[in-house]
Image 1: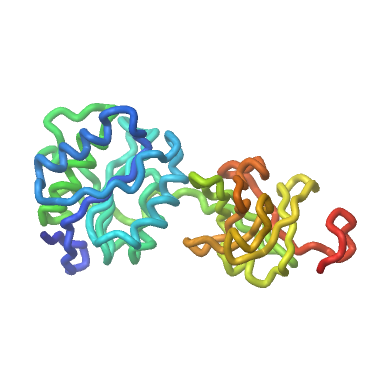
Image 2: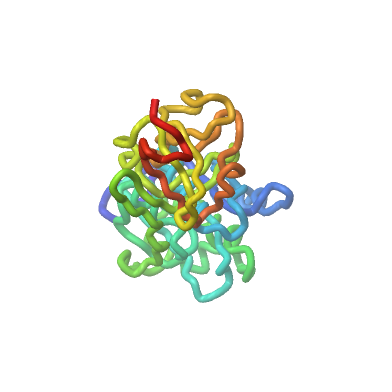
Length: 287
């Protein structure tokens, strides 16, 4: 099955992926699967995650953007939608390597960039592609899932609704990344299941720093020494390690532990990573 991307290209859309904050305790995810199966029974549905913290659009956007480049080309539905039922738009975005469907709240655009950029955008207004009765609180089931299913059957993007200027789509604020001599300050972007802390800083900012660095809250002089390594095992057990993660961002981990607990970090907090001065009495001389 194929669907028009908006720039004349056709992409295979035999796959629909789902990324949500719905959790696993209720029937919300199954309802979305069911809607897709009723419309497009041959389509394969991949669950990226349904454990995005409730309403955490930034976390959802990061997970989506870091995952979709590794999925088959298809239709990617994301629902982290604290504004459901308000005037926020539902949208579908075409890219050179797939289609994204979800709320216009900034959730989709980093993923669109990861797939080559938005080539066309539409607002989801066609009632024939939605549930006969749309709940004000469950657009994942009643709007986004059926639209994704129709697109996965090869229906054209324009069938979902009128075109939207991509420049007018909602973007999340850029996370803080401030390079400085001997280090950088960066916002905590996400914390994963293992307690690893991902910073918004690209890995290139960490690369020139020495084998020992200090990590501290940006507004606090208290700091923790970290090994600048390639992987968790480059640091002794229980020791903080600063490294490039699989998304090529700076990450802070504890070998055999949880960096989020050691650093008392949370998304949005600022952390400073910098080289250790040879005269810093708190850390002693470099080896």
